[in-house]
Image (cartoon, rainbow, N blue to C red; front, top):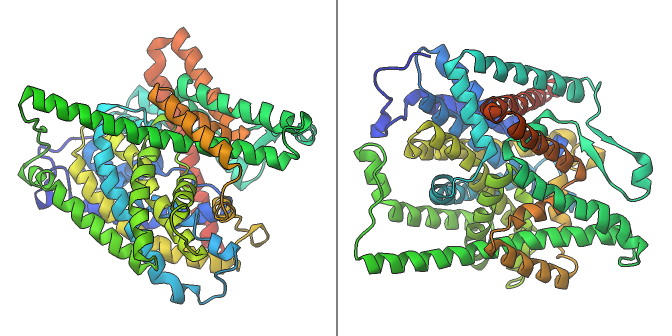
Length: 556
C-alpha cells in the first residue's frame, strides 16, 4: 500500500478522514443488521472485528492510497454497531419470552424507548471505554486477542509478501470450514457423546477454527485457568454432586456451578474497585510527596489536546445525556441513578475479561447489575429488561471496543479519532439495531425455539430476573473472588470457565495448548502463529456474518 505524504486531518482531528466517517456509517448499518440476525437466530454473535478490518481495508484501498491508521479508524465505527445489536438482542427479547410484548404493532409502540436505552448505552459505553483504555490497553497492556488479531490483519494486508499468504490461506480454510458446517451442514457444530450425556457428563468440543484461533492468541495461562474452571464444573460438580447426594438433582448442580461462577466474577468486580481505590490513594500520596504535577503527554494536534483537556466537561455532558435518555426509555429517576453506578462497575469487569480472554459475556454483566439493583429498590419486569439492555450495550463497548483501541495502540492510531468514530458508529448502530430487532422478531412471529429465534441469552436474563439461587454460596464465591483477585489470580477467567459450555472451553483450550507447544518448539514462530490464528478467527467471522446477510435477504 502506498502511504500518502500527509495524514488525514478532517475537522482538525489527526488521522480522521471524511471517507472514514462515510464508510464507517455504511459498514455499521450492514454489520449491525446482520449481527442482530445472528444473535437472535443462532444464539451467538461472532465478533465482526476482523471482518470489518478487511472490509475497511478493501474499501479504502479501492479509492487509492490509504494508511493503516485510517483503516483502523474506519473499522472502529463499523464494529461499534455490532455491540449495540448484541446488547439489545441478548436482553430485550425477554419481553416477548415473558409475554410482556407481543403483536405486530410493537415497533410503533416501543421503538422510541428502545432507541433511547440503546443511545444511553452508546454514550455510557463510549465514555467508560475512553477512560478504561488508558489503564487496560496502555498501562496494563492486557492481551485483547481480538485487537491483536485485527492489528495483525491490517499490518499483513498492508505489507503483503509471505505473511499475507499465511493470513489469507488460514482465512480461506476457516471460511470454507464454516461454510460447510453452518450453510451446508456437512460438518457437525459439536462433537459429543449421548452416552456420556446420559451419565451427566456434559462434555464435548465445538468444531470451530475461530475458537482455536482465539485460544492460541490468548495463550496457555488464561486458557488453562479457564479450562480449570470448566473441569471443576463439568467433571466434578454436575456429575458427582447428585451421586454424592450433595444436590437433589442435576438441575440443582447446574444452578450451583452457575452461582459460583457468577459469584467469582462479581467478587472480581469488587476487587477491581478496591484495587482502583488503593491505587488512587497511592498515586495521590506520591504526587503530594514529590510536589509536582503529572502532566499527560499530548496526543495529536491542537484539536486533540483541547479535547483531552476538556475531558471533565465531556464526561459530565455524556453522563447527563445518558441519564436523561434512560428516563426517556421509561426508567424512573432512582433506577436510572443505580444504572449509572452499576454500569461503571461492570464495564470495568468487562474490560478485564475481554482483555484476558477475548470473550465478553454481556448478559452476565446485565444480570449482575439487575440483582444488585433489586437489593435496594423494586423494579418491574419491563424496567428490569431495559436496565439489562443498557448494561449489555455499555459492556459491549467497554469490552469489545477496547479491542479496537488495542489495535490502534499497536498501530499508532490517534485514539481521539477512534473516539469520534465510536460515537458515529454507535449512534448509527443504535438506530439500525432498534429497527432490526423488531423487524426480525416480527418476521418470525415471536421469540423462542419454536419460532426459530431461540435468543438464548435473553432467555437466561428472563430466568434470572426472579433472583439468584443459593445466596450463601453466591456471597462466599464473591468474597473468594475479591481475595483471589487482590492476590493477582485471574479468578474472573476461572468463574467464566465454570459458567460457559464445556464445548467452547475445550476448543479454546486446544488453541492455548497449541500455543504452549509452539512456543517451546519454535519460539521464533510466534508472529506467524498469531497471523494464522487471526486468519482462522477472521475466516469464521466473515463467513458467519455473510451467511447471516444472505439468509436475511432470502427470508425477505
